Image (cartoon, rainbow, N blue to C red; front, side):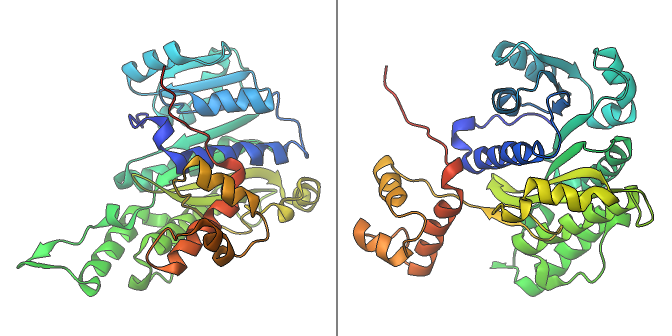
Length: 340
């Protein structure tokens, strides 16, 4: 649960993931104002998502929590605005005593909330699913829950060298499947296959498991639903999966989708398995400027012809790099080294 020690400026995909989340919250505001919601997350050392929540949405009720004293003290030093409260607590304890915690810090016993649980440990997946389920039960209509978990296939089982040879897929894939099934526990979806034991397949299976947790919180006969809005996967050391849902009355879903126009948003996820991959390239300023001149309609081949070189020996992979930039260029980080 600790914040990453990797410099934020080096985590491009994570940067884009945060920006997508903030843009999604902006779309939700077309349906209901969020300025009275409490924003809760494990802010990390820089509290970047809290800064964005305040800067772009005007949120002033904010809580950052962690289990490590040194991270909390660092957060207090780096706090971007004075609206943020800090607490040393586990995610499980926060969820289990949510009303009491909110009352204790002056936010009332049952406030509207936006909560982001950002986990890193792949071994605790069943616990994370359980906390997601319990959090949904705690939530009320128009509350937003986001969860980020490790979805790397290698985090399940990494092929070993046996007898001087690396294990083949027919050996390591069943081991991955067994471990994943065990970690998902009662939330495990049916129809799993060893053919899915790669990063893309594992992310989809884990997303389906969170869908099962959501349906356990709000069964089909329930008045409410945890509606999936966004699912993205990206490399951040290992592959991570971020899922965002909103709690709504089932009768209000159609009106919500109409007012937010999420169907027109290129990053909307229509189901738990509709996952967008973030794999933005590292580009120089000059490369990015040329790319920008040819968005949105230019063919990758034409762009690289003008550039004079490819980004990979494989033209297909080079084209994928351009398409990733085309999809996420609005969120691309503007980090530059400045010598002082």
